[in-house]
Structure formats: structure tokens, C-alpha cells
Image (cartoon, rainbow, N blue to C red; front, side):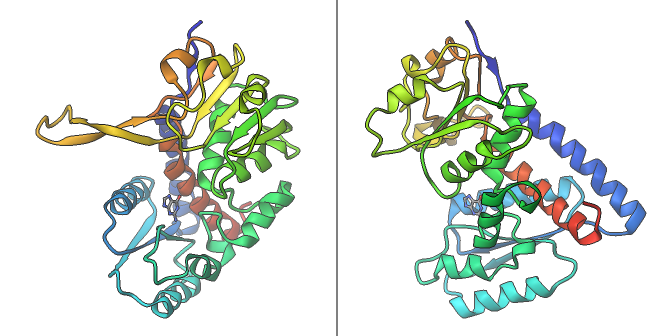
Length: 303
Ligand code: GUN
């Protein structure tokens, strides 16, 4: 059997088209556009490339976009004041502080200073609490888990009553996606198991999964024999396992990426599966755009 490929690159295009249409409509009727500020501290190359992609995507869907880049030596107090300035700014609906931050800055303190109603990353404890309660309480689901759920739904996979197994218990993927899949409501209603580094028999849990979500950060951790025939497999792992010459410019080296699942063998067993790259990756920024649009809609009383 060859699994159906769940392509994040294609789903991204569908969702960005939907967002672009909604932004144009709100602009025409109400004269407002979503405003997103991205705060980048320092010159971490991975952060710079994430931020560049966020800015490009925000422009594409018609947002007001502010890039605020600060030097590595900004003090914690200066960064807190900057966040306060954007908390007060009515043209800004989403504030994103790119992580990681330099060591002299307390990340938790910074994230907690963002107005929860502008926290489009969904990392503020208030939004984590809202997610836990579920239903109408949820304002900003965190972007990667929201992207995963959207992919499962758009692939037509039945979640209600399904055995969903999550591999990994991080605050940004494992814990929130487990929580989202067990809530009452469409795209959820699953029976959820979370396995992690201290789980005694990871394989036996994975073998039961109708939906297997893997976010462990260990290349090839999930073996093909762990997959139930016909299961939906979502691979969140993006592991750099080497370098190769770029197809566009053979003089340039690009990373070789591998997921947490042995894709080539797994696709012969699963019913549907996400590739790496081109699976979950493109969904994170897409859902950030959706959350920023949502933030404006909350402000305007449209939802
Ligand atoms: N750094 C890596 N991923 C993320 C993300 O999703 N949000 C923020 N704020 N920083 C990140």
C-alpha cells in the first residue's frame, strides 16, 4: 500500500488564499487590516530566516507588517518596554517575539509581558489555560499544533473515537496537540495517549494508533513496524542530518532534513502521511497568519 501524502505546501496555499480573501473583505468594509509585529533580537541565522519568511507571508496576505530588529545587547527592561509599546498600539493585533532570546533575557518574563489578546503564538499562560479549557475559551491555538489538526481534518481523517498517540511532551507541540485532540468538537474527540522518553514500551502504544503524531526530534525514531496499517502519520520532526549541494546553486550547501519517522518504509504501511520537508513545516507560519487575522476579527467583534 502507498499512503496518501498530506502536503503542507498545498494546504498552506489553500489557507493563505482564504486569509487573503478575508483580509481584502475586511479592509473594504471596515478599512482595517491585521497588524503583525515580529521582534527579532540578535543575529541567529535560523531565526533570521524564519522571520524573513514570516514577513514575506504577512505581506502576501495583505497584513500591515512591522519588523523590529534589536541588537543582541538589548536589556531585558528595554525589551519589556518595547512589548508594552506594541501592547498599546491599536494598529498591531499580533506580537511575536522570535525565540530563542539571548541568555541574559528571561524568556518566560518576556512572553508573559505580551498582551494575551495579541499573543498570536499562543505561548502566554492565559492562552495555554484557555486551550486547556477548550471550546469557545480558545483564542489563539499554538501554531504548529493548530497546523497539525488542520492537516488531519483537511486529509479527511476521522478523529472522533480514534486512538491518537502523541510521541513527545514539549510545551509547543506534544502537550498542546494532545490537549487539542481530546477536546469535545470537530477534528478532535480522540482517545489520546502521550508517550515520551520515560515510556516503558513506546512501540506497543504506537502500534495502537489510528493517528500517530510524532514530535520527538529524533531522526527515524518511529520504525515502520510500529505503524498500524492504514494509520494517519504526522511527522513533526525536522532533523538536520547532513548537507548537500543546492539544486538551484550547486556551489551552495543546503541542509539534508529527515523526520522522526522512517518515511520511505512508513509510506508503504500508513493510510496517509506527511513528508519531511513539505509536511507540517509550512503550516506553522500559515497558522500564525490565521491567528493574527483572528485577533483583528475579535477586536472588530466579527467572531
Ligand atoms: N522560534 C522557533 N519557532 C518559533 C515559534 O513558533 N514562535 C516563536 N516566537 N519563536 C520561534
